[in-house]
Length: 409
Image (cartoon, rainbow, N blue to C red; front, side, top):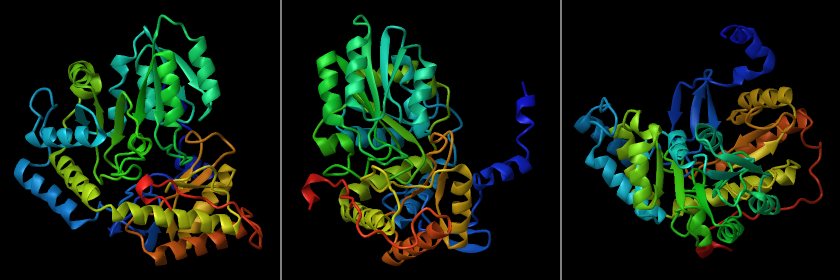
């Protein structure tokens, strides 16, 4: 059983390029730069979209919670770990996401695992091929009939729904914004198909909360629709650590008492809950941060495309540069570090072999100088690696970033 791990030596990590993972940084500066191997690098691998992790108001809220409640509550929510602070965040998030009730978990992964008790043998689940691993794990922990549909292919989903056992309850699982490709789910068509086939929709808004929608409430608000259940991580726009699931009050009440992911885990730390509350306040009262994030993202997309890079189908701040090839992916990552830019190399199992990407994300806290440096570094390294031509292409297809309707150009 344990022998299969023997190959995972330090030499194996070097040989496969995986030494790029689990690399520590020794300092963070304003949420935009880090100390890495004795050098200051621009951090472009973080999903702190609104740049709030370094905001003094968020930090002060977390520190105050530590002074008042300590670093841990020493137990689960169901026994001793519930604070009024948890309930306040749950009430705020439920209202923000347009639902009756919500439950806060210690991680976004656990927020999706909360779905497992809903997916019994009487359920047929339809899950997008590109959904986050935590949604797939929730399906595995349940016992439904699983149907996977091709990424974003509504025709394939419709065929799957039509062919499913009519005696089974139907549940459609989708990311709102997909974490690697950065594209937005087609929630209007998903909603039409759900109504036509009597299905429910679960929407993971981890990467769209704070980014999309008139008030930043995510993909559902962006399209003026409502999913039956919404999950989200608190580690992106809410600058904390944790997760939330929101929906009808009776469903959330059922999950509180029946989901192992909630019952058998320690409560979210007071500092994390307080940080998320403070970040939510800022998110709702300072929409210019979202505007800044989307402006930088559009300039990054189009700056890279003008150089000849392929950024795929993304119309969001998740910018995945296609590099194709594990060796080249990790080698490009290292050369970008040498050029002063820390990116996110995504290889198998994050993507299929041969479809490796460097995921690059700027936040609302990055400056124009940061953007220019990132583009300059990628141009030099991209040419050296043969990812882009020696001369920029004559034309390119520009990206129009997905924006809230009120601010669309």
